[in-house]
Image (tube, rainbow, N blue to C red):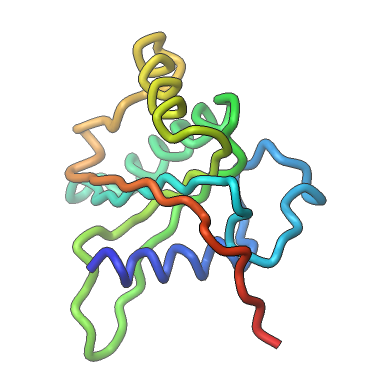
Length: 145
């Protein structure tokens, strides 16, 4: 289940779809989805039924607040796509957070920003369920020719 979400998320991120970003465009020119030395926090989430618009608004605000954290490079929210003959994803949305530096330090930075009120925790009025994983780039990436 996470494999298919990770694949869909990675393809969309690599396609250069609009993201919230702290990095200059030239600094993001690389073959892989994310450069070696970067990490990817992947959050999987479902909105509360009937609160999809509020969920989208909340995430837009949240993403812009997260983008201000030191080390954060870019953020993008993705929606799962149904495919014929395949089960639907357990989570309807994924949010990708590319950042540099140590994963534990970034986690502490996020927690401090939440505590200080600079970043909001998932709002249970709009976010029904969520989970997250952190991945790091281990290869430079392969480009189709």
